Length: 455
Image 1 (tube, helix red, strand yellow):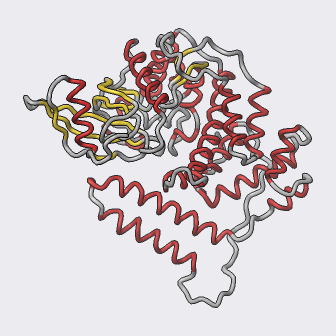
Image 2 (tube, helix red, strand yellow):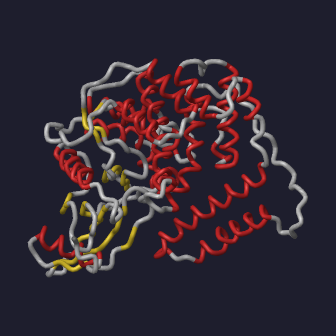
Image 3 (cartoon, one colour):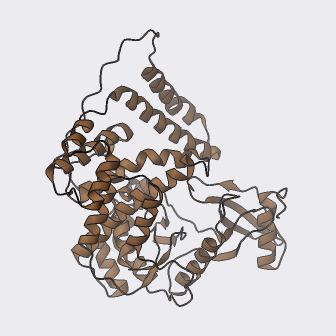
């Protein structure tokens, strides 16, 4: 048992003192935003001679640790550093420690910006933004040159099999997922030689300053596999964060491949990249549902994980979009008029909208920068209230029930099963119309701004 009474600050100090061989004091750590899977804390350490050492602690949520996964992450950082990949230096890593109370990884803090919208829009990044897609391709080429002989602890299963296993374990049949799995099985390209795959290389997980990429972060999904998986993942529409350019919202696929070829000597074909982009889109769909399941199953109470559940339809839409399967979809009906009620106004929908507006326009601006975590959670609450208000206004599920009946099904779960067994084909126009309409009906409630007309 660890000494749970030891403050996190003192736990970090003890670890650093042992790692550096000298006494170290640590200021009170501050939790960084994000971290739905892992907690991320930043702190300032000071040695006896006054040297300041900024550090970052990544740890599993106490009580929900995966020690083997954290050990693998540390090994990946060291392997990548050995071939010149810009990564934070690992200071210490262990399965547990007093005050930490979970598997952890302690690293030097690297200066740089990771917030996608700042990297996509702020003037200070104008110069590096023009070459960022190519730079990201180059760094991926470096990663894929890492020696894998010492990384045998990493998962090397077939990624499509692993993804299907995760999906089936959720017991949540979805027609869009079945379509994606079937298409991927039918169009799979030859596999490239095994390499270290980062698994989550995108804006948000790289640090950038005025000179370029300073650090590659968040290696918890690293594994051994086909290196082009990382390239396809970077092109997934979710990681454009609303911007238009297809690679992370900052560049073209050609720029990405130029950088990758320069570092690796390999240039994937357009068809190969498209397959892995499709795989990445399906992967994010399933992982989103998996993360939501952690909350919905009662395993881990989390506002962030719960909110992800309402974003699954974004990836369903993106998957149908990349496979050109939305042409038969029927637009959802306009919101129904409010039904007569015995209750006074404001109505339930008006109350939800008013609370969301007040939190967004008055409460959030009053929280100073030191309360970044609270501001982050408040934004999630506002988004969820918006979803609730739109669902209240949406009324019925529109034509979905009739479209299901037209293909001989009573539910989307039944439709998913029939696509899986092959008794219904996703190329059939009636099936496409039903699946696309159901996804659009969810999307106009969850995030109507996500819908577009082209990929």
